[in-house]
Amino acid sequence: MLQFFNVTKIYPGSIKALSDISFRVDKGEFVFLVGASGAGKSTLLKLLTREEVPTNGQILVSGKNIVRFRGREVPLYRRKIGMVFQDFRLLPNKTVFENVAFALEICGLSGKQLKERSMYALERVGMAKKADRFPAELSGGEAQRVAIARAIVNNPMLILADEPTGNLDPDNSLAIINLLKEINYTGTTVIVATHDAFIVDSFRQRVIALKDGKLVRDEESGAYAG
Ligand code: ADP
Ligand code: ADP
Image 1 (cartoon, rainbow, N blue to C red):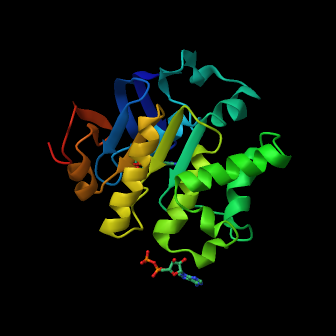
Image 2: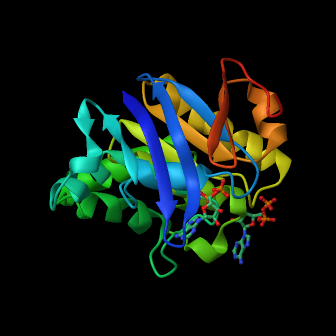
């Protein structure tokens, strides 16, 4: 499904965020990407979304070298990825339903299909009953559920979550990762960047650990600490 080949990322000012990273993730895998703040987790996700390009190395996703994408290829590629963030990033002036539907509108969908698919995504995360609420009326756990509905509404091949439990209490954190696991069971590949040791140790999934931009550990059923 995706593969990094000797990827190095150096930001302006000679900051080496990632150093010679190689790994492969197969379709349907669930991966925790762990490491201290500054280890390079967000940079790795930004390379996968093509917000950044590597200084060296290649990245294959579904057989395509995303580093070489030009122009329209980038937005078309991004539609196949669902993204979830620590701070939810819901649009405050749109309702829950509109936040989810907007992701489909961008892809040219409208009418009955848009309504049905948006409501189905909200049902999957248990938020259909709050479709007409605004983000400010939601708890953190609820807001993150809506963000997950928005991420899955396009049926993405890949979901990337950057510290999705960073603003949640332990119960809501477990619920959100359980939800991502449920989505993963249906075949979607999921990568969760986190420094939440409680979550990683609770779920025991594949763990890829970064330290100072280097890949220092890659384990099946791993723990947060090596
Ligand atoms: P993490 O997500 O694990 O906290 P990041 O990928 O955000 O790590 O950061 C890795 C390193 O790259 C850090 O030293 C950080 O300061 C640096 N960095 C991240 N983004 C930029 C940027 N846009 N410009 C310069 N340095 C950056
Ligand atoms: P949690 O226990 O997850 O921290 P909260 O105590 O923040 O949740 O919220 C509990 C419930 O109250 C949620 O169902 C949420 O939708 C609702 N709620 C929270 N804040 C508001 C608000 N400002 N206006 C209306 N409903 C709210």
